[in-house]
Image 1: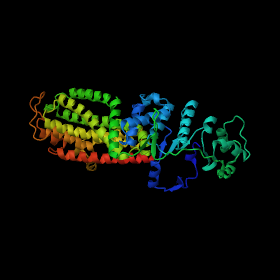
Image 2: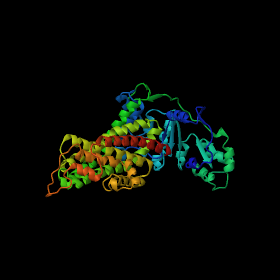
Image 3: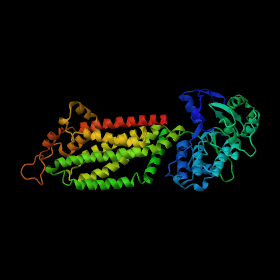
Image 4: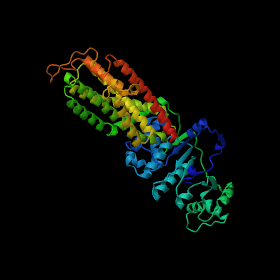
Length: 537
């Protein structure tokens, strides 16, 4: 019954499947998962997709190209019709009721026809009518040949009677195993009479919680008797996916073959692109903000790129650019990615795809998107701040900004998977501030204590700032003009700028190489953090 798994005192025993002993290792667990599915208590569905779209994506991930599109559509329509969702094909998941979401969660796992289904409190959060409909659907699936195992919270009498076999636990021990209809006769054998018109499920829960005295030891002894079990009548349905057309005709038998991970990768990329396109907070708002901020900062640092008297302001422009790109990459990743972990965990547990496949699809989809945002801001601000307009210098400047964006995105992914959003935002802000301090401009390198100077080598902003400064003033740039200076202009010569801030001309590709190493290390750490986080949850 509900809650006993978390409080059970016994966690040892043998796992039997079809009377075969399963090993307690990863191999045995993998085999069991391939033969079963698990439907969580919370219905984790992407709200942006319609019922038909999310079902078709699940079919592509599970069935691959074994079936044609029309055959998959026939399978989907048959499943949705059997669970009462045929009228909601084009309704987005975010607009479905609680009962409809639960039925859709069940339908998604029925696509590859699993012989065993586990459900965690499928009626939680549903009204009595929806709960009865949900259990009725599960009853129909059980009659079709599947083994349906679920925990349930305070079922009504009519719902309780639909269960073929009930297993009730108290203090980690079984106190009853048998047919739901045999519950009252079973209790009568130990002197407990259920009042007339009283729900048997409620009564036995009251008994095991001690409301009528301590009968736990008697129930544990009586529960050993298996004669109270009445096995249900089932029909054979195992490795073949059987679906009937709505029109009269012969039954279609289709052998299910798992698609390759590459095909799954293509499906996940397509799904991610659709999600990005429909989520206006990811695309439209960010595009507008990068466009507006690029204009604002470009106008604020007007002529900073060509005026020798504004050289310090121009380096400030580089700092602001790095800070802006860092925050706009770290914070969204910290706040948004945790919301996808629940869906990811459900799909991974049910063997929809491998974690590495999902991660590659995430990178392939997300990295070009972040690079596009960076290009919008960089191109506008670079032009309006009057930087030297040569393709070589602009591409060098842009390359550093792109790497900065991707590194920050990776850090946000690590923090978003390793901790909750509140702590992630706090730690992310601290990391960004410390990296700025050790970048070599707010505190010059020759002003740092020797120990802290060596710490600056682990600040990725040190290499990013030096790369931006070199792309603007390095590689033999001619002396600058000083628009508002008369006579002496200290920063007219780029060599003076490098000497004052303690940077070296010509180290651009060294900085790029270090940032690329940073990026690869952060991507690897983010994958390992994601894998560990999913295992812990």
